[in-house]
Length: 197
Ligand SMILES: Nc1nc2c(c(=O)[nH]1)N[C@@H](CN(C=O)c1ccc(C(=O)N[C@@H](CCC(=O)O)C(=O)O)cc1)CN2
Ligand SMILES: NCC(=O)N[C@@H]1O[C@H](COP(=O)([O-])[O-])[C@@H](O)[C@H]1O
Image (cartoon, rainbow, N blue to C red; front, top):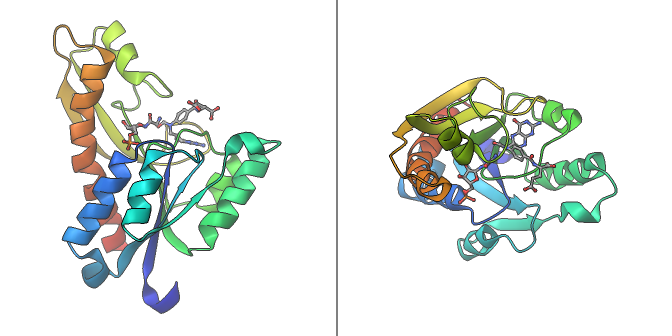
């Protein structure tokens, strides 16, 4: 790492509210001065991801690699890793990043790759977690921050938060309630990791 600066690279696929919360928390809490940590880049597999505009407004380097432009998942992941590595990351953060990553990519970032997942893992790995929780009659739902492993959404859990599932909830109303807790635990988890680096 240049000058002992701990670079954080955040991967997104959409609006990037979790990424934005981490960026704003890092600014407000002066992570650069306190921990030598900074968000060095925001990278997306979707060129039209709304979060890229926010990152650019904050003066953060951005890149977009359209996964559909690559012949294979491995080829996309190789280019993604090359793009990430230009920023010499101490930590790579998946914040609403919607691509399953290959074992080679995961191994390359072993121990410094985390994800936020909108369920109380190990329940409801994969997609459509809120509807599945409602359909299962769950009284509680929530969010998990975990280390990323080759197998999907089963890596070591770093933090969790619980919310109630309320009568009449839809996937959208539950997602909104969970998202408020995502914005609490994700910056907290990233802060804890950069403090320990
Ligand atoms: N190897 C791993 N890759 C990823 C992990 C992981 O734990 N191990 N976490 C996911 C994040 N995620 C849930 O938190 C998740 C993201 C995407 C998918 C998925 O099925 N993606 C499809 C495409 C879906 C779409 O484009 O809407 C795919 O990649 O074919 C499941 C879970 C990030 N990657
Ligand atoms: N499987 C990964 C997944 O579903 N992640 C979810 O995508 C949303 C992204 O929101 P954001 O782009 O506003 O941070 C968040 O709810 C996050 O938990």
